[in-house]
Image (cartoon, rainbow, N blue to C red; front, side):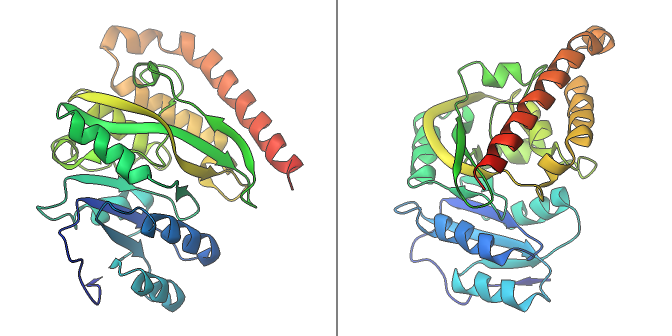
Length: 268
C-alpha cells in the first residue's frame, strides 16, 4: 500500500532518496530527514518505506512531504520497493539508513559529479563515523583505488552519501533479497561493470556506529556474507584461491571494527 504526499514539488525532482525504517528510533530518523530536507538547491523526492501502522513515523513522513510505502519486510525488499517509485524525471537515486545523515551540499556535490561525467554510474566520497551521541570518531577517506579494491578486499566505498545513476541501476537489476548485510556491495560490484565511479573527495555523509546497528552487532555474519558476494564476481580460477587472501582481510576488518567500537565507547 502506498500513500501519496499531500502536495507536490514546484519543479520535477532530479533525485529520489529512499529511506527504509522500522520506525523504532524516530529521534534519529528526524535528524536524517532534516539533513535530506536541507539539500537545496537540488530538487528531490523522499520515499519512506516503513510499517504504515506506525502513526508517529507516518506523521514525520507527512511533515517532510515524503511518499510512504508499507514495509514489505527485509532491507533489500524495502529499498527495492522504494526504488520502484522512481519516475521518468528522476535521474539519480540514493538510499540512506534512518540513523545516518547527509552533510550539507551532499546531493549538490554528487549530482554535479554525475552531470559532469555522463559515463559515470556512481558518485561517492568520504564518510564521517559518529557514535550514538553524534560525536565524531573518525573520517573514512576513500581513495582512488577503492572501487578496484572492493573486488577482493574491504569495501571502502561508503554507502551513506553515495549517488547512483538511475539508468545504470535499472540495468543492474534489483538489490538481492538474499543479502542481509552486503546488498550495497553486491550492487556496486554489478554497477562497476557498467561505468566509472567518481570520487568527489568530499565528506558527504555520516554513519552512526552503535551497538544496535546490524553491521556492527553482527560482524561475523557480515564478513561471511561479504566474502560470498565478492567471490561471485571473481573469475572462476580466482574463486578457488580466494580463501588465501580472505583470511588476512577478515582479520584486518575485525581488528579495525574493534578499534572503532572501543573509540566510540570512550566518547560516551
